[in-house]
Image 1 (cartoon, rainbow, N blue to C red):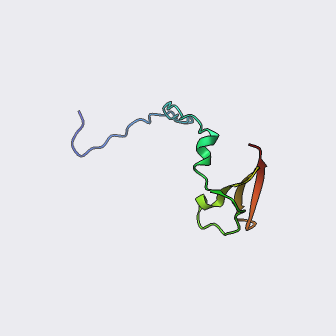
Image 2: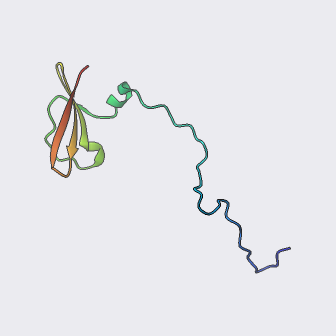
Image 3: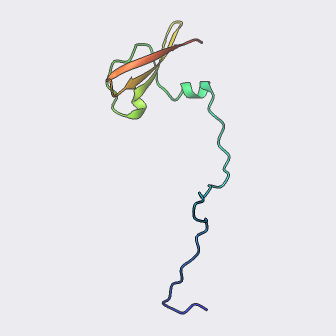
Length: 86
């Protein structure tokens, strides 16, 4: 019986030297490219502005048959891109 006012130390659930593993939670499936395109703004002119937040640092450029993914490099202060094929 525990006496009032006395707190007993409890044993740790994880043994010393072991790492507690999170419960197995299934991950959602990765998004398809068609769904990603809707998340990033599509533009018809290359971006030249300085982004104000993280989400503003990405653009998809479409002009005729040209398709590019732009990202802003805040260290260099410049936009970079890769060209994609459709």
